[in-house]
Image (cartoon, rainbow, N blue to C red; front, side, top):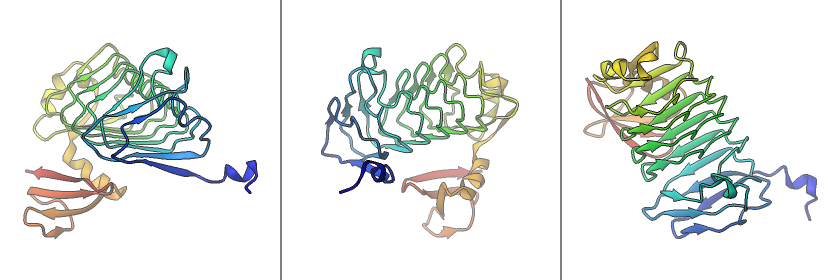
Length: 259
């Protein structure tokens, strides 16, 4: 039998399989060693409960969350706003193309959050969605984000790279991007759309606005990109002009056009 002190030495990963459609209230209460949650990719929605007035994962020292499907949950204060609300251990979030929205307050107060990747399915980022994520450093969102709510990134003062794949600059609510240090944070946007961002409200305030193809070299260095192939499937040492097929370290595949 393990003593209480030895139990906390273990870090547990939970995979929620495709067949599961809901996680009920209090299901994860007391899971004080759960550090990783993987929601397998699936077309159907996953419903998440709460711990009464506390978030579903409030007892879990999450380090990484992988969301491979659309999720729903109660968003009121009496249900803790979001399953991830004020999870102060969470560092990495990867959301695939299946999710459609980042809700209000979804990752509010995740003070240890550093890296976020959001896929092409997401169309909006809600009010205060990442507010209080004071060490957030690297943020990527897909091509279909159209709206970013008021104060979505308030207190995100340490961001160094903000990467947008949207060809139309998302419309920003009041003070959505105000607390990002626009003198030091690099904004990477799609090829040929730099001028659009340079003219868009809030986006135009960034001092560094660059072509996001240039970020691929950085992603190769930090291990985000696993391998590169040409249109015929031949492996390449680096990006080539034309179509490139890129396999990411999380197993996803992207098609990148380099002019």
